[in-house]
Image 1 (cartoon, one colour):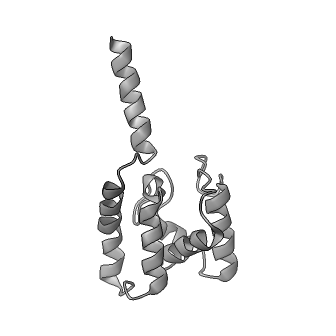
Image 2 (image 1 turned 120 degrees about the horizontal axis):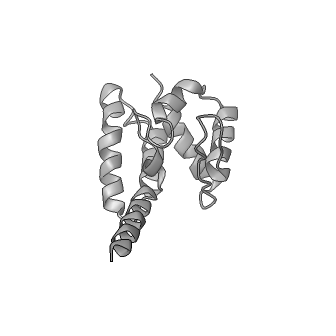
Image 3 (image 1 turned 45 degrees about the vertical axis):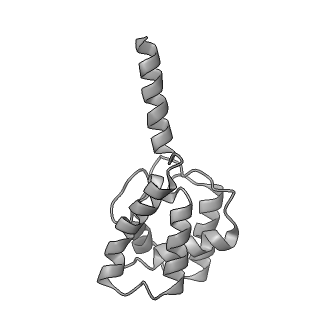
Length: 133
């Protein structure tokens, strides 16, 4: 019987780490996490910020990333600090979001997101790069 409890606990942990199916929880986390950057500078009027924020909320981005602190992956603000907001960087980073990657931020690989279109991935990157201080 103990084996079943352990198996259930492992399954629950994996489901939680993968984002589960709780879209409302994810949207709430996004609103809370993203509120700090909008409060310090008026990014809320920027259409790239708004559209990117919506796409982050719709996808599993917040499973591994947070705005201001490292989680499984780097904080969005750390990514913004590392890369200039150029068309070349937006294309390169969007490609990494779609194809996945490893090695730039450590040994944990980023899961590929092939369901994202190039335009949506670029919009997410534009949002992230707007978080640069």
